[in-house]
Image 1 (cartoon, helix red, strand yellow):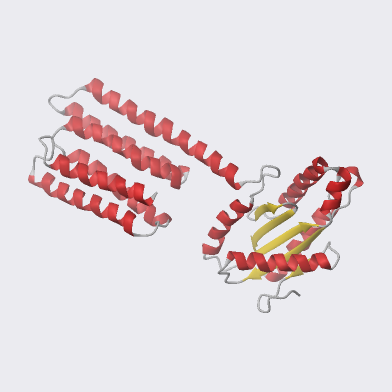
Image 2 (image 1 turned 120 degrees about the horizontal axis):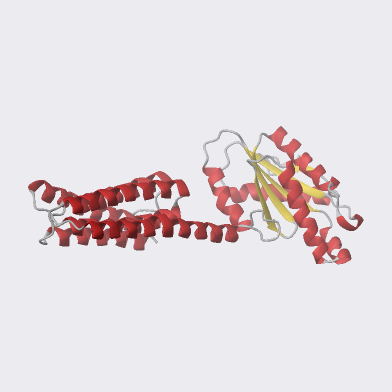
Length: 327
């Protein structure tokens, strides 16, 4: 993707050079100076994508805002206003990037900016001596179709596909891929509250499947997921990491984490189950004030969970952050 996006910048660079030396290019000293700047910025933009790591959220927005401004400036400075209005279609390409890598608010801002830019360039075309109102309206409609109709629809379809890829189809909690995806953001946060990870494993769940069948087991997993949603705080991250194992991530101090885990343990033990089945859970809890490794925190919570299971289940154990043991 970095190579492809950088190639987009290289195309902008070449297009600026070719336009600069054609009859439809800038026809004033200011226009020629601006086109030199535009070509240089487009070239540097391409090199940044090729040579540097993938940008963070803020830098990504700055890069795309720069591209939008360069495109508009290049279109506005050409001597031929029709060519300039047609060039506004390049804003669809930057919109495609925002569709994939940013949210609906950013895309909405881009659509608003692009439509204003297109209207300004088309108005310039109409006000020219050889202005063609019908052609200007046609170009505006094309921009509306691409920006207002196609890009939001593509973003919605991409969101559905990503949600499907990151969700467990049975319980509609996050799956392990979704947990890894969102947990990275929690570790990058500057929130000073300690980070808590709970690993929950249903006790003797295999016997439930063997006795009542897998359809009953699936219904119990769905009901357990619903119980976790009802008992957990709304800012909590919930996932089914596999089989009968669930993961809960929250911002909690050790004492509050233990209390929350015990609440979840009771919620699972007291939920009404089909066929008079009684179900409990073993929960391992790991808490760190300044966590650095998601896998290590998950591993410590997992180890605590297995210790709780060996104690007979229906138990909460808190991992010791300094001794890699449990208390």
